[in-house]
Length: 173
Image (tube, rainbow, N blue to C red; front, side):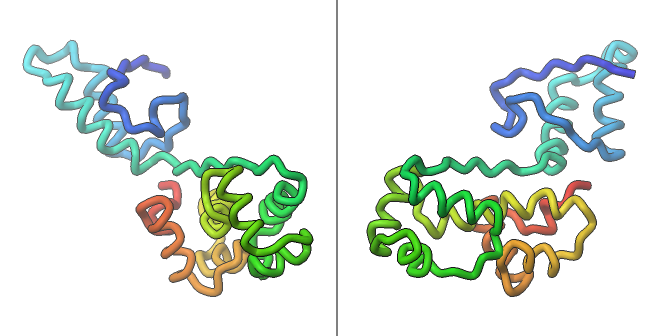
């Protein structure tokens, strides 16, 4: 069954302002059902229940990582290779040499064209690759290895820095 529930867009977290699929756990299901059945009780506090539902929702949404690709051919080639092989162990110096540019030029170019440093962009690319793996049942150590981290601690450090939560906390419920 489908029941429409409208939420005022103002208090919504940014990840819920666009259409999104949510995995609904038992607590959220009961809260949403109380909202749907609100007409049954004159004392029902709709605002409080919606607030409660919103507190439950962000934890159930998959975080998003938005990567801007550089436009320069050399930098875009590097970015596409990193997206295809996030565990590639090459250093920024290796990438710069392969592109025929100085490390400083590569770093300046990435910052100018993507709005973020090469290191940060690479971390975000790894996280973007890791997110679907987390929901697939693969062990955290294997996810870390597949995206270029030697340990789960390294993966968690990157997740905390970029998303504010650990990789385990990003596993869909």
